[in-house]
Length: 82
Image (cartoon, rainbow, N blue to C red; front, side, top):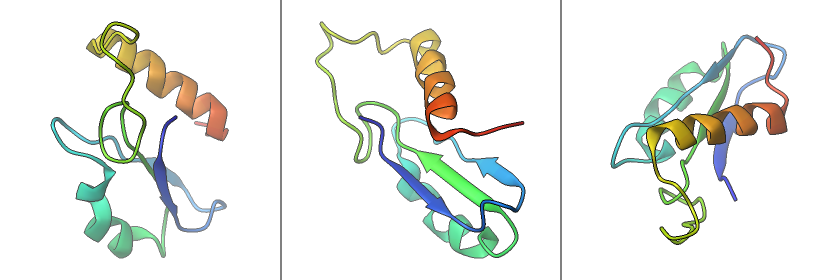
């Protein structure tokens, strides 16, 4: 399960905030507060980080390639458009 923070009006331009390593969406808390009046912001936690579930390493590929797949699926799931 992917946890994410969301703020701002969905009718405003959307910005997807992707955290680095080893951090979480929590790193964007101040930025979200500053930008949420002008933008729709979404900040997910990668698997194993923040409040997202942490699959066992023998059941999940923690490679950057697979994290890109996770982000693609997340974008589709929440219905983000370009």
